[in-house]
Length: 399
Image 1 (cartoon, helix red, strand yellow):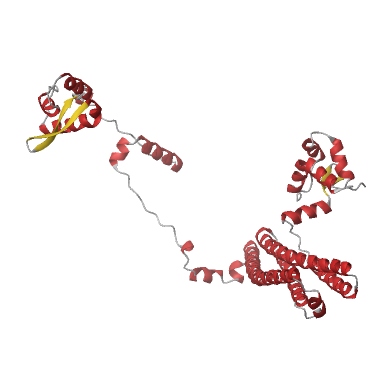
Image 2 (spheres, rainbow, N blue to C red):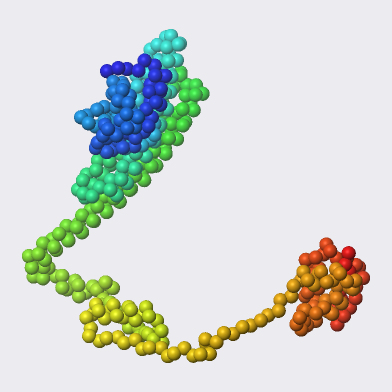
């Protein structure tokens, strides 16, 4: 088995084969990942897969390959998708802290003492992160178990096992809190106390407090889920017994099912009401789709009654006559051209203009306003006003 000689070599290998490694990680829960498919992901270069196997990045089993446990665990922890709850990590860090404290108090060299202090700080930071992650994984596993596990007995056993892990995590949190509070190692926290260590302890206590609150909610959730499972399993067991008695034709003699059903007034036991709807004669005579539906129902009901559709009367000749309606439209461009060719003011010009049809005085006012709004750049609008039939208008001339 080969080992990477440097971090640069490790990162270069992972980066070069990132397509294959990403696919292996996404399909890590599948039972098999075919070697031929992996070969396609590395452009059919078998040496690349061989190199990954030699460096123990992936493992080959017959014609299947998978990520090595070390790299799989690393990717799951970094991406925070690890579903395994391992509370032993917290216990290991607690023991490492206690050992480092002993070494710190026994060491006389300041440089080595500072090294032990760094180990304590590193372990304290790791405990907070691991505790929060374990609590999140515990909550996710509880939801997945209750929602996705089909077997009630296995579901109940898994939830009880997760509850035991919750108790272990809660106990380790109390041990950690007892340790950082200085009850056990008063001398160390008085001698080695510095600003960074105090910040780490304060942050750790906040994280532990958050974990405790979440664990209390998780405990309530587990109790609720277990009660639901107990109720559902009890209902299923009763249904199985009823089914057995029904198959043996003993359900009436050995149970009080008739009395129970007679006393039950649920809506589901009520007969379905029917609301007959009579179709109007006009619709039957005019709507062809309605007649087709009636024919389909008649064929389904196997009735001998034949639906006869009455013929409509002939269309009246009046509806077939062509009628033409003419309407004279006013062309404002022609009115504008005629006005620009003359010298009269615009309002009098419009009132005297031959539009080819009778135009009322109100229509002339409207045409006057339209002409000014559309062709104001071609007109000379003066400040002089005039009045006609109680309408005051500005005197407008061609430019």
